[in-house]
Length: 404
Image 1: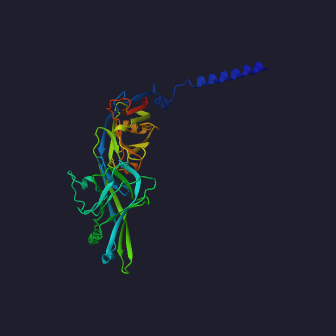
Image 2: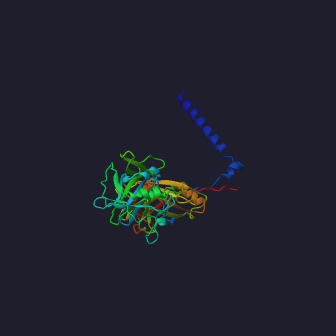
Image 3: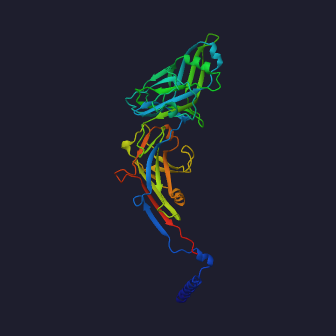
């Protein structure tokens, strides 16, 4: 009985196999025939095989750090940071009172750049006598010789004390010349408010400190101006004005234009250029990753951590300060100087389908691009140590063509 069942089962499998064999032996339809292809070519390539990375450079993109929630004051090595403050209009009633004193209060943040152990933090306050806006930058304040007509020569106050960096930073307060109030009250009939305070580092300063300031999307501590006077009843009184606008302007020595250097606040940006004309236009890019190495010997950092996240932005024909066409993140390996951008396939495929060329601009994550002065210098494509130069690896296939 068992033998008969086995034979029957074998005959069923054999019959089914013969059915499939003869069923699949027919020629394809006209539609199916046009989709047939001979082979699909899978290609693995890198910039060690072809010069896909054709250029690397750093460029200066001066931006006004305008109401970004933080402002810089100080000087360290070749970096100089000044800040402008503008306050709301003062009450006209102050004209009737004798001003006893004026104070300016600032709120330090923990980040600092420079010799924070033994250095000097020193700056002065001068009145601004020229209108400024979010379009103002370092080059519009100072000419090529370092001269400016933005400030009155009069010094209203100064600060000279190294700040102790801690998790909770105490406020700092400075007394200002009371003539400031009289001058501002004279300007108030103007339709455009030109006044403000410039916080300018002294030449002996070797530290740049970061201070809290206004930001549109957040409620943050910001500079406070207090005016003390005696009121009509003969009692001490005061008026408080918080800054409406704060802006920082920063200058620094220029990095080698052929290096890969990013520096926040100033702002230097690194750019990589690519040429993929060796890859056929009808290719599908399945995997593409870029590896770059941080050169710590040429980098400079403040007292904050080294960022683990970078962004590579493709701006194409858009302005560098606008939203990029596409942005891809990269990360730093733990306890390493290597950064990897693991997901460039889609971006590179779009370049391949276009004219075969493209470029990316590197930056830090979000506001770290503006609230830190750290300089990141990466090994460039022409560095002698080939183990540390940028490496691009690509896997792609050539799409089959429709047969005619």
